Amino acid sequence: MNFLKRYLIPRLIQYLLVIFLGITAVFIIPRLLPNDPVSTMIGVMQARGQQLEPGAIDEMVTSLKEMYGLEGSWWEQYVAFWGRLIRGDFGVSFFQFPTRVDVMVARAMPWTLGLLLTATVINWPLGNIVGGLAGYYSRKRWSRVLDAIAMFVRPQPYYILAFALLLLLGYAVQWFPVAGGTELGRKIAFNWPTIKDIIRHSFLPALSLVILGGAINFQSMKLIVQYVTSESFVQYAKLGGVTEGRIVGRYVIRNALLPQLTGLALSLGQIFSGALITEIVFSYPGLGSLLFNAIVNGDYNLIMGITVFSIVGITTAILILDLLYPLFDPRVRYT
Amino acid sequence: MNILRDLFKDYRFVLSFGVLLILLALAVTASFCPYDPSLTGVVPRDMRPSAEYWLGTDSKGQDVFWQAAFAVRNSLIVSVIAALISRVIAILVGMVSGYVGGMTDRVLMFISDSLLVIPLFLILVLMSMLLREYMNLFILALLLSIFGWAWDARVIRSLILSLREREFTKTAILSGTGTVKLVLNEYMPFTMPLIFSTLINNMSWAIGLEMTLAILGLVNMNIPTLGTMLNWAISYQAILLRHWWWILTPVLLSVFLFVALYWLSVSISEYLDPRTRTQRVGV
Image (cartoon, rainbow over all chains, first blue to last red; front, side):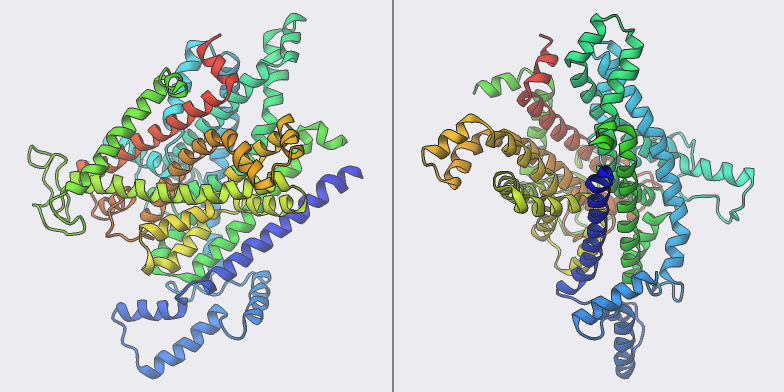
């Protein structure tokens, strides 16, 4: 029960607080800034050459205010805002009227989730195992070569790397399609040609996420393993005649994995942002491209919806990772 | 001076220092540009690189070389302002949190943890979306600095925590040194190198985020930065039309800039950590 009280409950409280703060920020930010979305929206409509009668403008302002929940005092708006969120109601998209925001997000979500999961499932173990070996055998030539490559890839933002891959493999040698999630007009169905098509289209975006994420994991793992290797229990195991494979696999890498797990949880937000940008580069039909279109069209409701969904999604994913942590670290379980 | 001499033994430091000097020189030449960088149609369109136009010209009738010079200059300006302001916040939060401890520490660290966990990028998009009309280099830098301090505040805090336990802290307090003076005079020298290395990392982060926002069209598109340059090249279909010089220039410049900043910070922080220093030298 001690575990419950000292680890689980504080963690759950923190989770709820972070979501509360994040969503409150989403509520407050637009209201603090000097221009309000309603007049921006009307400005956009007029700029597009839509003729609006003066009476029609008034009517529109009222209906827009209602839609954005801008009626009443701040407190009333805030309560109404939460009420709508809990019901999962984000209003309708403005530029794809009358599609509901939650429907659009739900349509894009599987693409992003699939891309993110695939990339993480590949790059995390790969980066950690290779990084761990490279850290243990840091004097070897291959370890130095890998390190040099990682030193070059690591500082690049997702955008630049995705772009380089696109130029190289999409245009220069044309191995992969440069845009989209499937061929144009393909109906999504659960059969082999569709799956093959999706894999072919997802390959480049996934590859850029894998390369960058792998390089990051490789580097931090290598550094941690170099520290762990110099600790005395490793020396002791060596002197005691434990085989090298066992030392690396059971003692060194296992110890070094714990900070890596924490690192994964902490960097999930960044990985997510990176995936969104990568999607935009490849016009991959996930949340990132949805966000891009929402920004281009000034679709305020849609941006709010995507932001709220992402905040809840990311914090929940981090919570799950944190709850899995005691499985890997017995010290948390028993204290 | 000893520090510099040691650092120059690291080939990564030398290389990145050299690249940064070249980029800085490019940024300085921007002030000799014969025309206003926001003007279009000043040179013939879509020319390949030649003796007259070193890096060719773009579809907007601008000289790619001068655009690049301005882009590097402006991106550096944004990143330096953002990094400096967020350093002030990070130092304040880190030092107060580490030294005062208790409830203050918990509240401050909760705020910085929340900033780390929430997908900040989306909050930034929301803010810049609404600030779009007012966007200039300074506002952009300010926006980035509000969000860029959380991680480094944590790093500084943990250093202060370890300094607080050191013998000299007790000596200073017992001999009547005030808190402010203790922190400024005694702790600052220890934290300075660390702050410098986080400064470089933060610059790199700010340049990257500026590019991201520029790709989304959320910054002032008439001010050339590395991000807006890329955005223009993409929206004029530079890849499809095979205007490689236009798109390759900002991509290569940013690759060099990011690598140089990263290597600089790595070589400095490795120098600061004697454990890796001995490993590198191979004692």
